[in-house]
Image 1 (tube, rainbow, N blue to C red):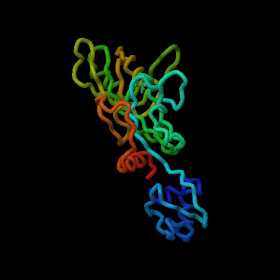
Image 2: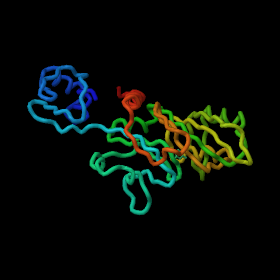
Image 3: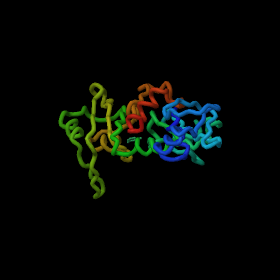
Image 4: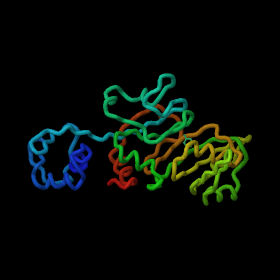
Length: 246
Ligand code: URA
């Protein structure tokens, strides 16, 4: 990670304040004064600022492939939850999932302690696309339904009206014996949004899996369900970039 980002993440000031400290020669890495703000530092480097060793609150980024039947929560007394998949050595790192997948949705969850990234990935302002693969019961999608979804529309439920932002529906072939598959790309994250969009068009989602979040992708199949791994350097950089944090 860049030295200026790590110091800013550690609460030592804004990015421009910590850059000032670095360029003025107040920061050393492993005993050598570093004045290059973009100098690359690793987790085990010893970093001193104004003669004091800093406690690096290093930001961590993981990709979790949530299985169906797991709660998107860091604690639950009754049900299996995301925390059950986090190894004990990471428990003190203040990790939490970005956004929420339903209990019966599987797939891609970013788990991080980078609060700013988490906020931006969930904010409609940054329009980070989220791609889902749904198995549903119902008739084939019509061109008219697909274009209604592409333009955005209103769901009315029990007297409430909710605007659904334009999204992209891509059928995966035709339904067979009343069961079909389709991809849906959303740019916002309303509660149960995929299921509610399908229901609006008389289709019942029977399985749902998130397979992409911005530039990060996982397998469509369920082979890696339950796995937790750090984002690769490239995935991390692309994700931060998509959220305007490069
Ligand atoms: N939309 C849903 O309906 N459920 C999810 O888990 C995510 C998006």
